[in-house]
Length: 635
Image 1 (cartoon, rainbow, N blue to C red):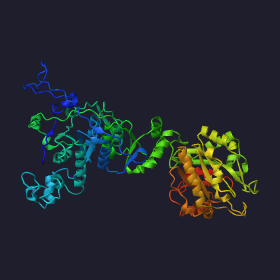
Image 2 (image 1 turned 90 degrees about the vertical axis):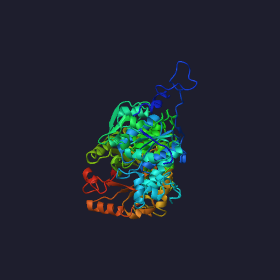
Image 3 (image 1 turned 180 degrees about the vertical axis):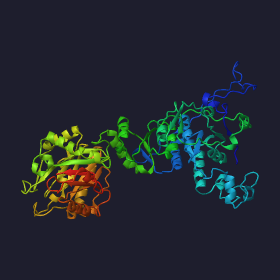
Image 4 (image 1 turned 90 degrees about the horizontal axis):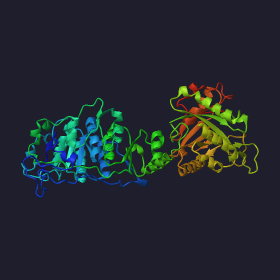
């Protein structure tokens, strides 16, 4: 070692400055020069030290994604992103959750980063012992790496300029420890407060800080050493630890104890008497601390896994708001949507690779901030609900179950049919109307389209009533000789509603010279993709929840180049709806044929016919299909 370090434990006077912001002269010493009369024995008040923080250098749209899933790497990345300087750094062990739980509230209270050191795996041995082993049994003297005694530098020893602790560790351990050292050096830390024997050992080997203090396991003694007043103790499960840290407030932290976890083990060098631990201290103290100016405009998204404990503690120590979510997409978390609707996320950091790109995450956050939710909750359609639909048009009872009764009775029937599925599925069941808005016709009509367009004014009452009833609506297009995009644009104001999706029925898409019922229509993937792009842009423009895009099919020939259908739009869930009817054997033949070589990332739907199926599948039989369909319509 080239710098003097000392391990100190259970010394209230060592950290008295942290609690009081000043240092008192020991009994019997003279007052410092210039002390006012009558205040002998009292030192001048020192300005408490504080960390320096700054907003992260964000990626797209003020969003940064820490894409690593390793806890130690995450902690370093978070520290690098928001801390410019920290007088003190906390160090805990990566594989010892109890030490991280003990350290996290102290980090939050002091306003300093919490970093992690990797576990060596054997729980014993110094870097010197590792060096001996890696040098084939040579001593440090023989290797020329023991500093002053050896009389040679790391360069002379052939370590390519590495420090003695670099030479003393091996493999991933050396790399990760070096990264921690580099970060402590970048922060220009004066002191390291350690939690656990291994963390203490590693800290003592580092050259980046002058003082190493090991935190005692006793709560009261820890409060004396750290200068942090812990307000009681809270037992948490491993699953709840990150959320507990995220909710911590600097002026009211509690000690966190993980159920079933052993407390961090103290270093053998700190198990003697207080006098022994304090010998040679010369009044050395850790700097008095006050929390930094809070980064209260920063939002941090974190998964609940315990590996993120140190990273979340570092974020909270900066004053950032930390929101814990099990969902990689904030639109899928109802509680997070409520939080963001009340207080939208400005500059944001997300912890973990599951959050994907910064640009996509920003768009998702902006949608969540609207607070608009789908029937069944949330803003992501699948796999968070199943749709059970009545199909048809209010204009004709002959075209499906939807038109066989009045509007009020239709909604009642839709809810009754949907309720039959609740005992056989785990997801929320959403009653749905698939409403045919453009109807294939044998006559060409005034524009020669062979398709009748239902006016928006006629459809609007159904859409509005559905919103009140918590019913999803899918507008179904049978375009004849008109292209799908042209017809979809006719219903733009309805598709701008959060609970309205779109269905394309290629059976009724015919070309020049063709007539309905003389052949089955078809559409190319290129035309479908034009609709998908337009619908995705409309959804993004209005910051709407995800929309359902249904593609009806019962023959492969109905969608040309089906493998080229674009399912990548984050704003859409693309679903292929199997429309076959007849006996179970015939229906499954259609189902299996359609599922073969389907586009990636499509969802699946199924149609039950009241009259044409023999017999009509029950809800249990329908959900027993492999895979169970996410959208079931009744015609």
